[in-house]
Image 1 (cartoon, rainbow, N blue to C red):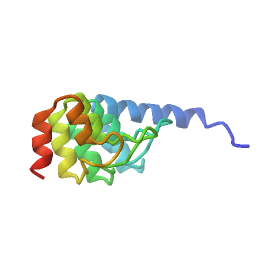
Image 2: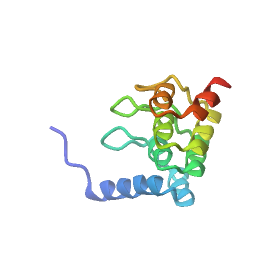
Image 3: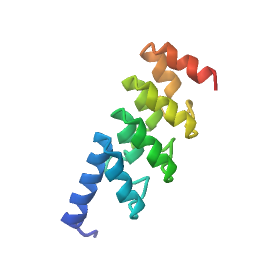
Length: 130
């Protein structure tokens, strides 16, 4: 039988996930530089990169990738940060993820399929240029 998580650890993790969602890059990377894994995931498998990407924070995504965050890490639903950024129409984040090695064909649905579904032709052109 597993023990209940330490409430202080849960509180700290929640704070770190919120920093990623809000794009508070400086404070977020201070935690990562102090030892928090750049690929920390929540209970749905959303990584810090995923949360920052989905909420449109290119600088936070760039900083997390530079510290070892995975550009193609899928969450529990098979989604990647790139597909999330495409869904939200965050072209700046898409570019950062591509520069960080993200694969437009990774995940389900992948970023290419997501761009097609939502008519994001400018992103399809960007993927084709890669």
